[in-house]
Image (cartoon, rainbow, N blue to C red):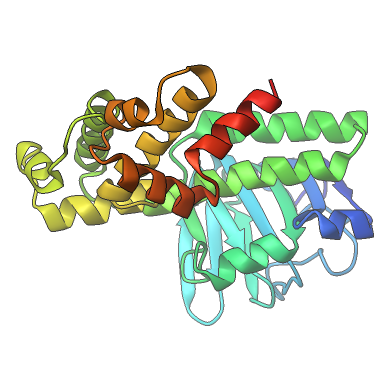
Length: 298
């Protein structure tokens, strides 16, 4: 096999500031691996280099995005799957793995290695799982654009580069999490139902809502609707409605002279006292205090 591939990468020293940020990047790069080319490209430092025969175990996380070509991924104890264009490979600390492009196709990959308090929390709270190391993202253009901007920032040695790369990593992991929430079957139908529900709630948030009736009008069961809505938004339909009403109420408090009772009515709260109690419960401040503070900062 040939021993060269077009690649660009960096490995980064980590400062206390970077660790205190909550997420820091250990490495990032790009490789265009031609067919029948040795993989991975040579030159990576100890702890990151690997070969197919021996595999590798990392001390941190990594995300690998394959935008063209095909290959294979294996993880211990028993995961094996083909890798295709649009796939994101998630690698976890202390998990043996190996991956490589098909010798006949090669591939074009981007990667970013990262660690910190936040990704460890994502793993602990099951936003990401070692059981799901291969994800097909639903926004390939956004992923590719994000990696392209990352490479530009690295080449330009932008100030606070770690924080720029950390922000890009948050974005990428958000897209991965979104893709994981999508159900393999009937994705389009599910997304359509949830989008229609969200549109209805946004357009009619000031009126009284019966979520069971809304589910019926959308042609789905309430239990399915509630479950899928929460999977897509992180909130139940009722909580989503309340949060939307509170956002609108905060805007009215800061931008108008309307009495609090009128604001409560305009945002779907028939009871001014319930509105004030909920506002304080959610924001730890009363509507009047919010209004005064908003004016202070204008």
